[in-house]
Image 1 (cartoon, helix red, strand yellow):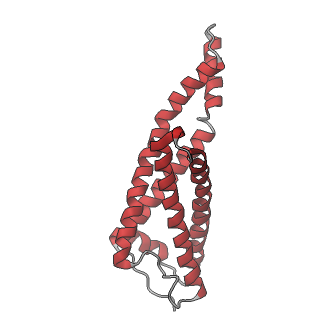
Image 2: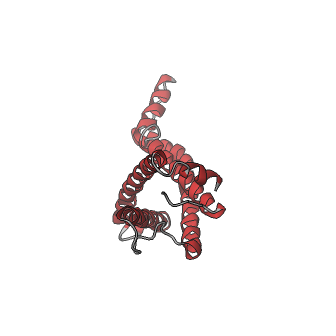
Image 3: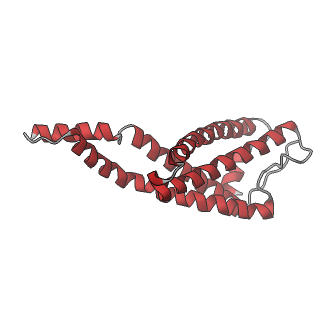
Length: 189
């Protein structure tokens, strides 16, 4: 028989706020690398100027494009700060209920230990994203390790995406087997 799960309100609140915040940040990344790509927007701007019998250089169009997309990307920073606060709250809250459910260091089943290790990896990826994001944002190009921080920041997102796929797949799998009310309890308690 499966263990009865109970998720306190604060746990559920942090979980869902993190989930929606991460999805929002991923949306800003997707937009910045597709429709809001500076060269794509610059081409549209140049085309618009050309249709009005005006012209600007590609560099001028790129400068305008960057200012347009930077307005959108400001939300990436704002929600990134919020994720940092949520990670801090989760770690602080974990002193009360345990950060990793289940604890991978206790004599649990292999499944429970792997699940706990997955959560450790998730929070390490999140912490690294928050820290490198703050370094990139506040120290900027002048920081000696800027390029490495930016690369690590981007690569850490792949860990988050991997976690999300495993997490959602695991919840669906568990909900279909012996924990039929896992999703309901994560919403209602």
